[in-house]
Length: 422
Image (tube, rainbow, N blue to C red; front, side):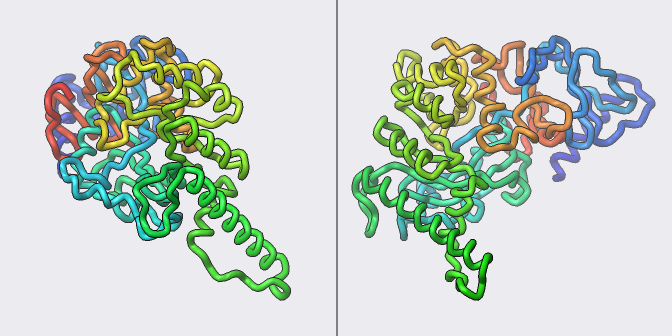
């Protein structure tokens, strides 16, 4: 908090001295002016203004009047976009440069762990949060691992700094994985067995919900079933209160994931989705989003699998990108988007895959994902007028209307100076 206050004071003094302004600055009132504004849900605005009041976007446009007392942020020569939403990460679990922490995001005592919460194990001191922020990420889905078929509940965090409690933004649903790993006691050994286990767990949760409903309808005739936290959590998936992310790479794995969605009418999306190029038409028909990645630094643009997200977007399907920390760092997210542009994805669709589409997957599009009045003031300023250009370094970032990164001032709310080039 001291860092935020000291930066705010420095910028306030500089602004007043430079402008010779006598009007007192109104706390929480910020006007980002002069940049090429990409609202994402509408056409770009040259020389646009984003007006922020008390952590929310008040106005966006080319003719927005700047109120007296507003702190003016000159974005001339920059592009202005919504904060990037990364749809799959293990940041805070697999702490950067500490390999031993890699086991923290997998509960291996049982293959079904719907009651386990990512929130309870995250470390906000992971230095990778500073890197993600420097890459323009403002919201992130931090999920449990994929070694168990059902590893638990994910969490949405914002890059505000402080403790995980300070960063917590919301619930990110449940994680499952169609993956046969090195067998642990009681774990399925084939992908078909994984599918049957997950189907059985959902059917058991369905039966539990029916018993609860019968009890509430007639308590005298139907005793309340013993409380089961696993069934309760899976029940929120069955009632579509929670979204379900399913780890699946190959065609066979993805088909199992798609079948789970069909069988139980789930609000489900796919993590990774390497076979999207084979299944794009079926995914679009099923209305099943794909969080695609990680890509860089592993794949080149000649990889034919990259055609999958391009085709899915053409068909009206929902595609988002992720780097799956620590497999790839978040600086590559925008580079990933530019790779898909080179494969034929329209630039506006690639930018949506970084922002708006992730918000839609988690049903938080009323809060984040685009620059529109009433939404959280999560705003990223990048060098140049093309936010997907390789050389478009992130210069400044605001989260909930608070400046959390200022490259020129060497300031990052997570406390680490951003290395040049990141």
